Length: 236
Ligand code: SF4
View 1: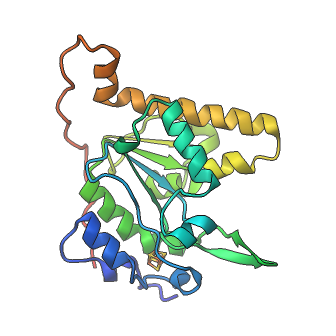
View 2: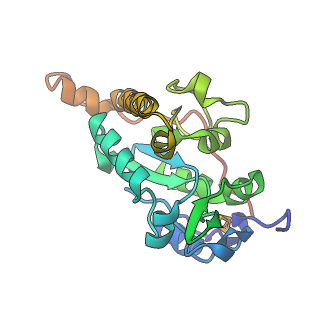
View 3: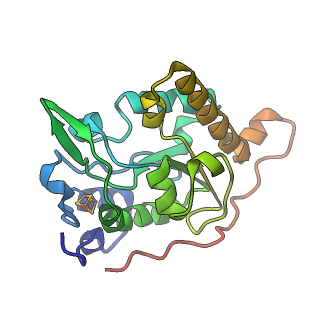
């Protein structure tokens, strides 16, 4: 892969979720498109208050062309509901839009994307954030957290903390649902699932709709605040 190639070469002139999704379908910004079925772009409402970012599509996502539709996606949907978040408040996407895998017999096993893949794909993520303008970004797992927060970030130490970043008013990182499923011990899976729900509950509590629903006699939700900073339009 050439060091200069990236998704920035494929960005449309006008940014909308539709134009981005169409342009990303033909992205050749790194070599991952060569062995994947299709680009798996983000999905959710244009006005979502929360953007959740995973690492990259898995086997089922690659085949179906939609993010978080496999077992990890079902766990995430359950956690979103258990936390009291409305699915229509959430846009889901990945740091890398093509599936990277290695063969094991007839199976395709997940292979962590390299730093170059993450960097090459970042313009799509930046563009999605510029269009959706979420109030809160949730990083699911270490790859997303280190992409959006910084290389020094450690899920084990800073999970569930609200941080100020250039991506949104609040950024929080928690477990990736695949990591919950992969934990070898039942007790670990149960604990991580609880922690994922607890973290998403903190996110729900930050949303004005949540406060309004909790106390319907209170005045209506406050206006959407200004972002602390915005990611620049990705340069070509
Ligand atoms: S992984 Fe990202 S940068 Fe690489 S080809 Fe796919 S969409 Fe483009």
